[in-house]
Length: 383
Ligand code: BGC
Image 1 (tube, rainbow, N blue to C red):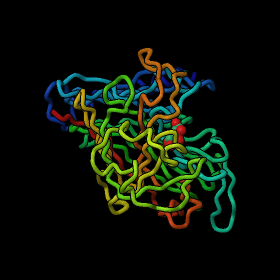
Image 2 (image 1 turned 180 degrees about the horizontal axis):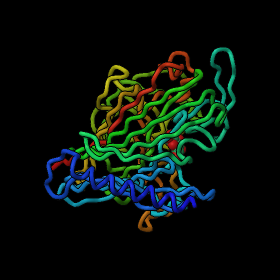
Image 3 (image 1 turned 90 degrees about the horizontal axis):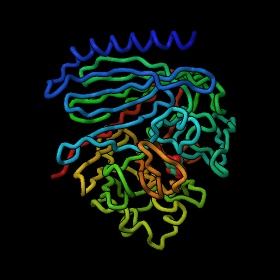
Image 4 (image 1 turned 45 degrees about the vertical axis):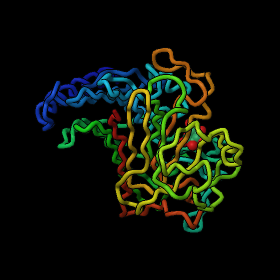
């Protein structure tokens, strides 16, 4: 029964896609911008999952499924116009469900760590799951990355878009308040994947939503040769469990200074306490621009292919994670065995453990307010 209704949904969306192709308002160089949908299996509970393919007129293609809001693949051109998939992940839904280090997911209700899985709000202490050593990570045992979202295809002036909705119930994973979340993924004519998150609540709560794609702009090997620029003068050093100490020291003179483009591998093995705690880079940078203002957080260039990734966001922080927990035990798309540092994440967000750090920007959302986070992964090439 559920399967039949899923098929009806898929057909409806495909029809919607045909209409969208005609009205996306994108100047057609090769093919019109479009979106299509296909079945992507089902969860162990039997809920069907759909894989959506967004394509723009340049042939750039993003595949997103409504389980976990996962970006399953992202094909962008290199300097010779050759399209290549630049994100890590799996071919099959069951592999995402079985064992995934958050490949491509939508992360929430609170992205990153909350110390000891506890925070106090309005005098009441809330207890969350501790799923990362002593701490809470990425929303808990069943975070937003492991739920099925309600999809809707949209025609927008910016290109084909997929809207995903989810109602996170009061008490889910220990968080207070019914949180109604909407995420919109848009593939723009200028080769960017734009992500817009909004959320409302009926009780005071904490929110920090982000995207967890692992990138490899070369589409193979390790990421140590990628050049990274991060628009930040300061970062948030951590303790041995990756909880910020609360200090915001300058990056100057440290391996955390990415103000000028620097290879990820250039300093990653330096004898540095912070790098030891992260087993590489696994830290939050304090972005040098006013919070709420949409702008550049980071730029990553891959010299051999010329691919460039720019990360833009309204959020005050950026977690740069150099894939230090990849260890050759997971085999991904096309049989690629993901070895140590074969992918990196750039996660625009609030600083880790903000609910317990009074000096960090607030992550509290109250009834009547709207949480908003706009971010973008924009692709181009350097010749
Ligand atoms: C964190 C890492 C963590 C990874 C999980 C990142 O956002 O910073 O510490 O291991 O997510 O895959």
